[in-house]
Image: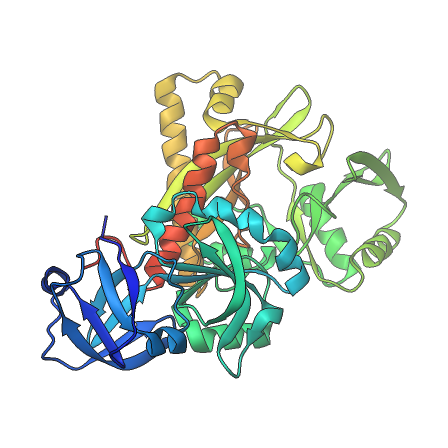
Length: 448
């Protein structure tokens, strides 16, 4: 672990940074060179001094520079040299709301990310879009104080990297790209149709995708139902199993529609495709949706099962397959979402139970699933989306064939760890999120 430094205000010298000789030697920083000091997106020209009067875990900084850069003194910072700049950080922003009022109500919950602050260090700010001043490059938000474990309100400078947990419109995406570039964690939230298009262009991944089309006209329903007999109708965006419909074609019932709402199953029949199309028009209210081949997924006691794979990047920028959670839907439900009344179980246990596998066979299955998910994650990034965490839903049908059902990159919930009663895993996922953000902020693993 790299050493952490406390900032001591220098009340006498101006535009000056003073460090201990051992720090200068370790970081290869010479007082004879010209330096800039960077904190967040801002950098200021400095005079560098080296003094043995400081403790090795201290650095002294002119008070005017502390104020100009808006550096919180409560943080424990790392130092890193990059060209002719000395970086103090990490300085990480967590964009967690669009409105200040929402941030005010939720900021305390963000402490879950910082239970191991000593491994992260630096300054952590939580903020909303409403709190940003794009002209002054300042943010009205909350800074985490590692001494008191409290979030302190104030106005701060733009951070070095941003961990985004909300949707951004195109205007805001352009703004963040301008200032942060690839230092924006989860840059763009892709939808179900984009995922299908990107993955299906890779021949080694297309075989794992249920056939999917973008709905345009009622005749699409007819042709797709003729091809598959049973299909799902899903919104481009959405989660928690909401507004997902299953359509079945049969001689007895005509067109049967199944869906769940507020945990209650509903079933309807339609005599023709045009009345069914009108129903979807009223449900989606002008928004686009897809038609997807229905899969005969494995089940247990009438409960459909799929698997959530939690993928998180670490401080080295490497994808980590954190866990596989089996999601059981309600009995008779067409969705497996836990918040819609489903239950969870460690995925390996489910594989063993459903297929009667030996531990060695479970290991092989798990390794193959992980391989597919890693390849899918890499493919998404090849298409220009910078991801830091992913929730990948994998289905296995009754013929033991694996399918990629969905990928979620809008800050997929780590609560799956709690659903399988693994609280340490929950905190490990949160910690890796912050360590990857630390990397983006200029402090990769084993930095010097």
